Length: 87
Image (cartoon, rainbow, N blue to C red; front, top):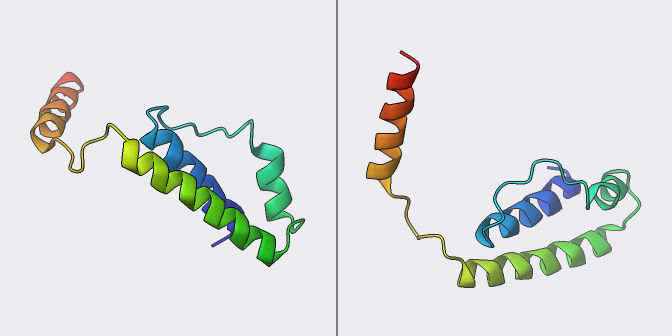
């Protein structure tokens, strides 16, 4: 797995936990992630960055308003409504 993917996933996960949703185009971090991908950071620096972003992720997880488990009945209801709409 590429290091830039690890960092991107930690950033995205933190966004989700903070209620910002899923941001697929990482415009603000694009140059940074490309620099990681293109080898402009040492492994030592990448590990330090991973620890930093993991700490941010863990902190967001502690204060997240997301429930520990999904509401399966609500999900099932939504699936049925979507299925019926397109049948």
